[in-house]
Length: 488
Image (tube, rainbow, N blue to C red; front, side, top):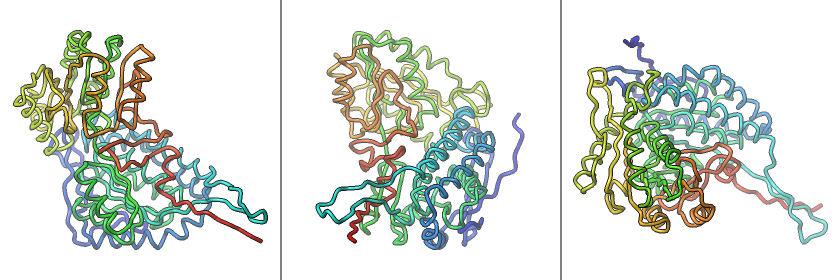
């Protein structure tokens, strides 16, 4: 039995204060493991609330940018310390609110701590270069200026890591932030805002407005007081955000979908390849933009790989993410479960063979949650919807390749280009894959779902707006280069 916890009542964070939405509306955030359990009531904000947050950010940004990078970094270090003290609490809230296992949720929160500390250190790094002038009496150099007010729109699948890797660089480079977290994980988001509040950031430097995407998300993209918009989410919504921002000349950054391949070459270590396929494709219930979706296996080892994969997938334990024995939690919400089930049915209709999973699990203890058993499809061809469209759930599609060259062709046969991996012992295969695969993140003998905070992250083709997040690459979005020419 699980102890029943009273639902939290969450408020917006605007100008350093916790405020109920002006209209008083709220939305329940429910536990996907037990849909009868309400984790909290979160604001259903309207444009007036967003306007207030933008005004607070505008009022704060000029004094914030005047602080030295070291001074801003010291406050980010304090925010990291606050988050670290609450590691278990935030991880448990995340697991209750979106379903991933407690171990994954706690690990993600620890990653948020590391991201804050990384960018706190960026406050002491160089932000420009000295450039020789043709005028011998002149001095010329570059520096960087913050954009001003940055709108952050973050998804529910990584409710700590993604907003933190957007907000931390925005803040260290001197911007103020207006953040719209996903409504589904707004209780977790409030805990993050509390860490910034506890760290003592000046009022208005970080603002959080919770509400629907059509109102607050599009409102951020359209708001004349917001100078840059960074978004992670679906392609459909991302393109709307980008078009709206572009129409008024605002800077924008989009990280969107993926249909990520893992290629299994004939010389691969099949045990390691199976382990990476399962971890990359099914951890977090497949709800990662970098999750493995297409498993492209060279014919010579196809049957052996398939047998090992199916055997291990069948053994995975589905259940509540807070149970220590659970490997795979529920889908994050009912809509996502319906999407996953619709693709499983579509795969069958298209002629693919469902080898295992793809069903609502038996058992009274799981009947109240958004559970689905992990699915593996065989006899998948590259043109099928389940091989082309992002499912965002625990579904693996097996695609047989004639040889290594055709495997690379199949890997590139998609509109997406976020991440890709290969298992091989052949250095020639490695070099060919690195040069030829269309993906912003390429991993060799490792799963597709692995992003390191100090390295640039982003996709090719329809997976992104062709900018990069994280690492030192983040400075390119959050600042503008200013060239300075000085003559006595």
